[in-house]
Amino acid sequence: MADGHLRLLIADDHVLVRRGLRAVLGTVPGFEIAAEAGTGREAVALAASIQPDVILMDLQMPELNGIEATRQIVATQPDARVLVVTLFQDDDSVFLALRAGARGYVLKDADEDELVAAIRAVAAGAAIFSAAIATRVLTLFATPRAAFPAVFPTLTERERETLELIAQGLPNPRIARLLGISTKTVSNHVSVIFGKLQVADRAEAIVRARDAGLGRPSI
Image 1: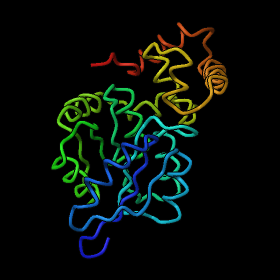
Image 2 (image 1 turned 135 degrees about the horizontal axis):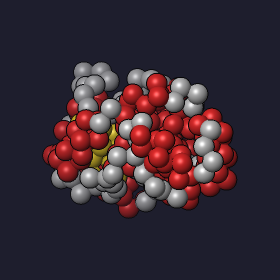
Image 3 (image 1 turned 30 degrees about the vertical axis):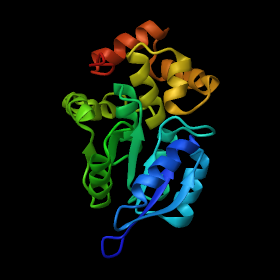
């Protein structure tokens, strides 16, 4: 970003959405649409090659969903500024997007002024959320979820995320979709979690996890 000039990467699998965002944002003074991505893998590759100031990331995309794409981008570019722009406003999507490293989360029905303000805020290093999301975020992080790695120190980051979703009562296919991995991989994680926690089944794992503060019911 130089002299307030912002280069944007739009990542969305719908051509019409990308065209709409380009039409709206391309006319904003100081904004430049540097590139567009139609898949999560394209978003990761373009983020690395052009290093945009802000990445507008949809969550539901082919090849790699927006959460995993965000995770990969932030892993190699810790200062990357990802703004999620999506239809999803459930707690799981919000929580996982923020855990992946997104700096903001707005809904696709946001008006132009709200979207432009969110892009500028994220570019400036602030965290920004749609009004409909802000209250949910405050409530989500009012529960000390960040403390659970100390409760289960033998679990990896991905295993802890899987356990959090197991504790919410989600089935493996739903967990796979949220984490952007295969159902078989989720099953493997579940087996490892059972072994590390020394539990016999899913029900016992849920009890252990909830006793530790995981799996708070959705708002």
